Amino acid sequence: MHVHVPKPLHGWKAFFNEIFVIVIGVLIALGFEQVVEWVHWQHKVADGEERLRLELAQFFRITTEIVATSPCVLARYDALATRVENSGERLSPSPLTPPSPLLSFMGDKGAVIAPTGRIFTPAIFDAIRADGTLLHMSPVQQRRIAVTYRLVDMINETPAQDLVPPDTLAQPIALDPSTRADLLNRISAARRAYRYRAFRSVQIARAVADMGMDVPGAEIDRLIAERNAPLKRECGAEGHPFADWRAAIAVQPTFAQLGQ
Image 1 (cartoon, rainbow, N blue to C red):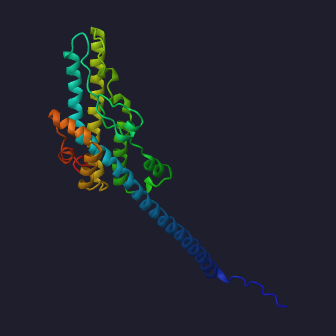
Image 2 (image 1 turned 90 degrees about the vertical axis):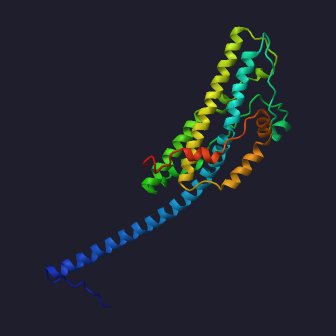
Image 3 (image 1 turned 90 degrees about the horizontal axis):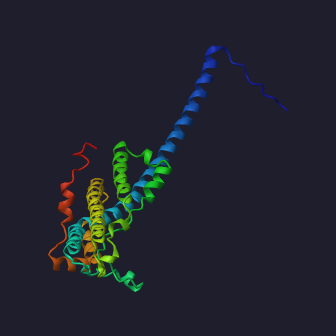
């Protein structure tokens, strides 16, 4: 049996050669680890962007619907206030807007105003922020996404129920001065909440379009027509057409114009 005894290093040159080889090996290992991590985050960012695109596209659908229907809905708030003001000692009941097929099936009779109160759920944004994906996107992307979702938070701070006037407007209730003033105040508060919702909707739709995550206009037109057919008929009969959502969004400054 032969035992090979390690050969001693002969001089400083051999010693530094050994150290150099070790250092190069460590650097290569660290560099490879960095490359693997970079590739991992590139995949995470690409996946996060795709999932975020789906969420923001849905927000675009909701906001453009709000923008399109807002002139009619706001006019109907005004009509409610006028009805209360012009009624005598007993309220002239307001007609009910027919409910959706689902609510009708559940026995809902409708509401004096049925504004678009769809919920904005930022589940994807919360997920990519929590797992660190957002921090690996470009600074411009991070800033624009953060601004967009702050606008979403601002809309969500106004609950959908705040947009609906009291159901008593559909009943011939007695109108003493106190009741009349209370109804007018509640109608005014609901109108302000909806106007704020419409204003923020324009900003969100513009932001989503700027990031290239919007939806083709033809699809939006179809969705608005399908979801709001009864409202559009009623508003047309009252002389309150829907708004041109494209024109409304075009008025809002872009991220580039805002320096973002």
